[in-house]
Structure formats: C-alpha cells, structure tokens
Image 1 (cartoon, rainbow over the protein chains, first blue to last red):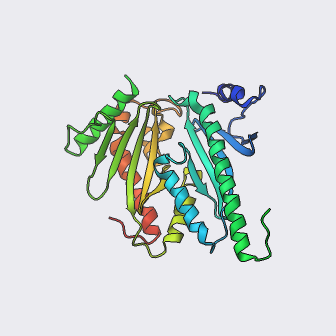
Image 2 (spheres, helix red, strand yellow):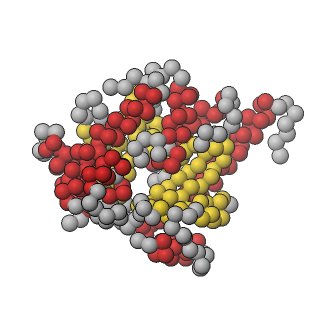
Length: 146
Length: 159
C-alpha cells in the first residue's frame, strides 16, 4: 500500500482534500483540539500515530501512581485504550499511540479508529489537566483554580 | 484461505510442537495455554480479524518499588519498542504483555530476529504458509522472554 493510497483513505474523514503523507516523514494534523503526529513507515508498511495527551503530575504527587496504574489498566489487552497504547516519555508526558500494519483487514477502519483515539486522548487530557491543577493547589496554598 | 483458518492452522502447529495436537481455539475464539512456566491467552476478534495474544509477565505485588516499576512499564510502551512490539498492561497486580496480530500476516509484523529467518521474503509481502504455521512456535517464547527480561531488569522475580 502506498502513502498515496493511505492519504486518500484518510483525506475524506479528516476533511482535508489535499492531505498527502510523505513516506517516512512525520505529518502533524490538528484533529478536534489535539495535534496528531502521523508517519507512514514504508519499510514496516505501517502507519504510526502519536497523540500527545499531557503531562502527569510531578513525581511525588500522590495521584501520579494512581494515574499510571489507570493508564496501564487501560493498556491491558488494549481495551481501555481502544486498540491503541498509552505510553509515557522520560519526562512524564503521556501519549496515546496507534499502529496500523497495512495492508490489513483493519485498514478501512483506520479513519474511525483515529477519530475515536483523538476523543479518548481529549478525555484523558482533560483528566490530566485537572490532576495537575489539583497537585499544584496542594503544593501551593495561594494557587487559585479558575 | 480465510484469516481465521490461517490462525487455526497456526494454533494446530503450535499444539503439535507442544505435544498437544488437539489444541484449538474454542467456539468463542479463545484459548488459554499454560506451558510452564508461562501463561498465554489467545482471543480471535472476528470483527477486526485480529488475534490478540496475552502473556502473563509476572505478579508485581512483591516488587520492592512498585511505583518505579509501573513508571518503567508505561515508558516501555513508548513507540512499542520496550517489549518485543507488545504493550504492557495491568490487570490487578498482574503485569500482562499483549500483542495484536493483524492479518494478512506480513513479515514486518515479526520482530527483527524472527524476521531474519524470512530474509528471502520482500518487505510488505505476505509470508509463506510454512512461515505462518511456524510463527507462533517461534514468536511466543520471544514474547515471554522479553517480558521476563523487562521484569528482571526491574528487580521482580520471574519464573
């Protein structure tokens, strides 16, 4: 499957008529409220999507371990992550990642799955923002949540 | 041959290699396999035409620093790179490695070491029926081994 074919598959649902993936070069898209990074890895025949979700509360915050547990529970069998995988970088920033190996019986579902992934990531982003505010409020008595 | 038939053939070949020639997915498309010291579960998703493979990596309740271990697990999921292309997840106190096999099976779905056995195959080409049959036999020990290496690295006693 070529990058052109994948681009065509995604263009209509994304509402971007001239959408064109270049093999092995990351493309960033704003879908709903989030920036999504897409790469077609030509050697692997795989579309990889990365959706930045947000930072965890800092180390030492009581909710950090709880959130990590919840994210890993969502990753169990990829049920709570809707086929994707929640991950974290060394700075504690959470991502939702997806891979689609193509051609595949799942390729027609790619646009729908990507759309659902963004909504799921938005929900988690909102949750992480609230947790960060709560952690900040706990550490700074003068902090006022708006 | 349908994707489900390919999976059935892979499971049969796996069973034969384990001395269990009757090994098969049940009518719900599920199978649990417990070749000591590991534990595997297979689920065929007929909607997605995908085989989900789960490997019980280990019980983390005895880990000295659970918080750090969980951080490492979530980081291992980054880029699907940490544990043989699978994703670590938590079920209670059990760390479970899950892997999703999409069909048609293509050589790049296989990790680098296994892929080298199919070097004559062009990338993005479907692998041969013989290689398909052998896939689980070759891949499951690697998946389990990668999970064990991860946990050992985190100081968790593994089987």
